[in-house]
Image 1: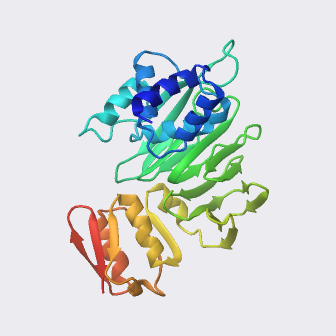
Image 2: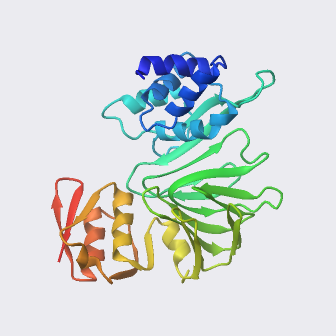
Length: 330
């Protein structure tokens, strides 16, 4: 369907006026990769100062779409969607600030409350420290974001979503557990320090506990981690692996934004560097990575320097092509 038709259907759907057949069309559209009509509808409603009514059956999809529509860096400030969309479409303005969006919860109109979704994204090259309203400290790594409901956070619940990587030092509160959602797993704590990696381009989600105790769940699977334990959750087959790693110096490394690797394949390290710096790393011959492991802590300097240090261990080199592409050779 054309975007104009999609927008008309979206307007009817969010107003609750769709026929069953039209509702099926909208739900099918919301499964597509190209949702430009929805992006435009969100912006237009905000420009008119109107909140968007979110039916229960698409609330999660809509939440995720808001997160993808708005991807700004890391001043913790709430602004209107109108301003956010203006920044998003302005061609040279990539990184300005985090965003809060007003939207309606599903249910009956009477008595509904406008909620604010706060999205804090780091599109810069260095780790940024954020302090949440409950006192919890978050070190947000490059190309990473967290989001949470501003209205409820620290009052009735403490729940955040994450993509990318962040280190959390959680303020203790026995009555309100702190929950971090990353993909299909939930990490639940009362007060502790841990690191989560949940890059969408990587098959594993990792949870490393530095202090305290955490409970990690995925469906019916449950694991309780102790300090020095690393949990890896495989997105593709839902398997969970827990093993022991050294945590000596980890707290300082994570809070200073360093990249930490514990006996992992070089191929994994290169993917992590590519994610961290938004660069493309390719190989002339993939066999050069076979049986090569990396253990070490690396300061987030320029990607050229980090790559050079990592590759030096195994006698490898790289050739830079353009501003954002690296080719590995021996």
